[in-house]
Image (tube, helix red, strand yellow):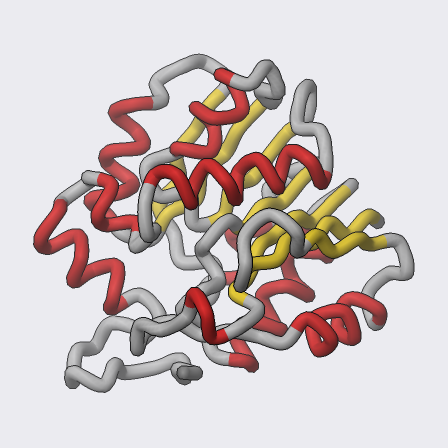
Length: 209
């Protein structure tokens, strides 16, 4: 299902793409349930695909829609920790959880909505990452965010997306055909790869500048 930017179907003034996260945060606070991942296992599977796509070690990384900052934990535990990490998060409960967990010198958590304020993506990051944070965007917001994220990255844009109905059964989720995403990437760069062999219904793209 595709959502449009603006008032949610529930009548809330919150953007429709944020509403599912805000509702989940109302129940789970800064806990895992507010991330809308199916399970920690599927989250880790996607993170492993990201590390197959590129190396984060020694880079400045922007994690756009960082949630609790779980990606940073995963990278550091796997020996692929970035030199500098900026987590950008629009849901206050998740931003607060990320801030509490990541007080290290080279990590910073910033509150902001990268769809409403795309300028937030321009922090000088070598790598811009969207992991799970595109799954509630409609087609126009999805394509616009990818284009802006690529422009904001000095080296690489890395993102995952739902590529079939298999994992997009919930009403708030949207999916996009691999061929359409490849066509979009081809308008930005010829140097990109798409991985779709790690989880049926999910795909990861790395696009190099």
